[in-house]
Length: 314
Image (cartoon, rainbow, N blue to C red):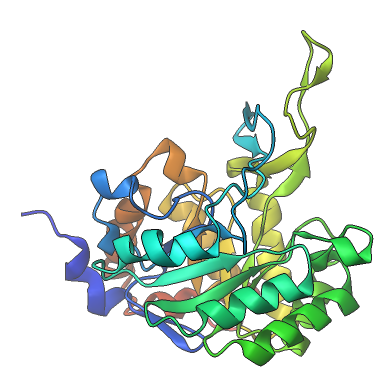
């Protein structure tokens, strides 16, 4: 009989700062909805954690279409944080996940620091939510539209304020659209972050040569998929050397080899995003493949792989 995810619970357990996960693979925010649709295709309990769709205080309808376009080895998306808002999430979406054993991490978004603080305060007391993921790629309307995650003092201030009301672990999702991601990692650490996830999408653009106009309704979008993996791996590698915070690596993970690069670069866990669209069973498959790999290599825990590319262990 083929092994199932529960056969790997002990062998694949990992520590992610204050969290303990049954395995190091999670679904990245914005690529798995609230889990309901994928529940018809896979066993959601195979996931180490589920980062639900990005949440805002009030419902958002998102950007005008088209919102998605395929690119070589990836895709551009400009969804615009289309989501039901805090109240509906708590009253309708979260209860549907309550029967699952998969831990829930909520990605929060806001236009102002007050938005983030309110979301953190309301969500950090909910028993079924184990952590919050702070999306700092949102524009700060009080600072002329600058993204929170591209300014060191702005990011430090935001993390400090959110952390002051957040009673569960706080993860900061770093933007790659910066000059030096290490500075942003240190800013988040200084603000009190417990963990970091990286990277968010890279800003990109596709022009429709037929109409001679930008393809996306929002003009630009976020590039994801295998095309960004080398950039993401490099940034995880750099941040691992710059900060002591545990890392979640993401960006174009489709296979075990992709995931291993992130572990070796310094990630304690790996989030899968675009891969879910192409292969809905990618995470259960990664769980099985990692278990087999560790057995073959004689390694008793995924944590033994973390950071080995830095040469700290023989």
